Image 1 (cartoon, one colour):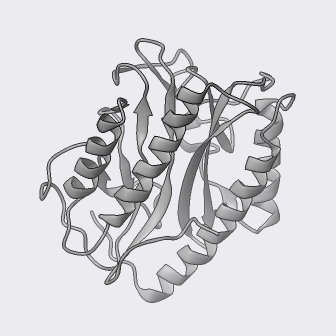
Image 2: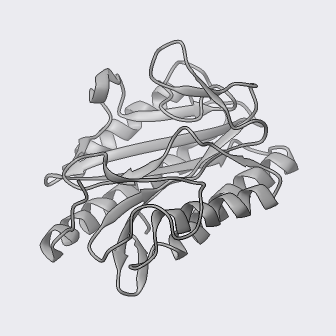
Length: 249
């Protein structure tokens, strides 16, 4: 069921989302060669608890960690942190959700570790821009298909692919609410966006084939052909004036 948030609820979500954005900014600055995935997870959980929130992912469906970490082609989403130490040339996706005063927010970024291949950097920038232009379509009266179509057309024009098996989602008192928000599709199709809705828009892209397979631990997904993947996400409120990114400093 799609929920329309009251102004008081939106205010709480804005506050929580800002805290999440601050945490992600701090974590992003810690991404560098020599830092392990487990160290980033420990830092993330500490920062979440320090700001008076709870980690949204830890324990969700049995997931063992506060932070989802995907390194290179290892996973596209829901990667479990390990002792792997980041190396120059890697790319790493950080996906973090928090629960604050009864409401959830969710955010993801994909970052270079030191200097990376120029084509891979172009891939990251294209996915980040796809999120930005997707948010522009997140206005009352448009549909989730308008968002997905815009993201898909841009990503494919850049020579990359969007994942079809995973989706963005509504968010609020539950981490995952209706509607599903695809990164592909047709204009004017799907659920209509209404003022007061809050959704997570999260382009998940690949350099190669978009098809996925489940990882051995049962939590994550990896590209079937082993190609690199990328993931960006924001929590976005639907307003009269368009999509308002809540997880942004």
